[in-house]
Image 1 (cartoon, rainbow, N blue to C red):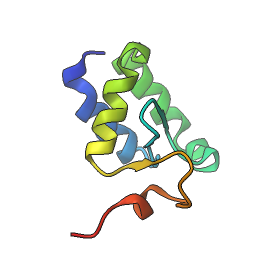
Image 2 (image 1 turned 45 degrees about the vertical axis):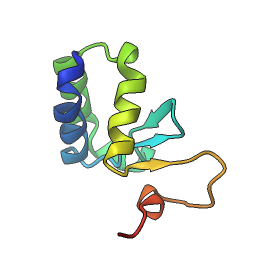
Image 3 (image 1 turned 180 degrees about the vertical axis):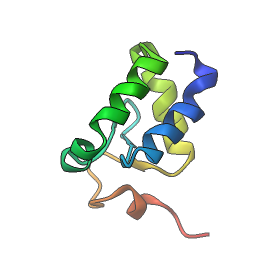
Length: 87
C-alpha cells in the first residue's frame, strides 16, 4: 500500500460496513467485531488488494482524525461521532 491509497482504503473499509476510527494519535480500529463478521469476505479482499499497511499506521490515523473519525484516549465518548466538534 502507498500513502496515496489511504483515502481509498478507508473508503472501502467504510463501504464494507466497518466503523473504522483512530484511537488516540497512534492506533486505529476497524470497528465492532460483530459488525466485521458480516464483512469478513470483503475485508479479506481489501486486505489482499492493499497489502501491507503497518508502516503507514500513523498516516492512516492522521487521515482518520482529519475526517473526524477518532476517539481520544481517556475520553468519555463511546463512539467516534461524539468526538466531532460542532461548527
